[in-house]
Image (tube, rainbow, N blue to C red):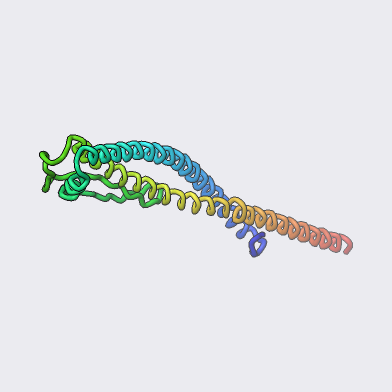
Length: 206
């Protein structure tokens, strides 16, 4: 649908300038959309790999826990788990990537403030302890990656809507308006030329 403007040369220049800017903006947004989709697909693959690795670690943790319970009383294993004390420092850093706020986390284990009894627990419980230290950062990392996927999906959708608005509404409207103004100006020029010719004929006849 064309814009409601006066069909004159000044408006034609304005609309043509807007059309140039709109086409440039459309290309930039299209490039951004393609890059976002490319990064999104890479991240999906990374998330899938992270889930596979996490599943392996969780399975190993569960096996070691079951074997620990099998070699010592369950209450001893559970007591050892809850008697552990170790600090975990989580640092959050906010990054802006392609206008998207992306949170990144780093994890650092501190010193063990409370330890379990080495005499009461089996070697398998040591494996449980090691596995749990590996699993927790992986869980947090997976949560970070999935949050990034959500942010990227929203940005892709927002960019897609803007690209479509330019491609199917705004730019066609400007093109139609340019055609309309050009046609009207041609009509006005023809009318002016016709009137001029009539004036010349009248002048000649006298």
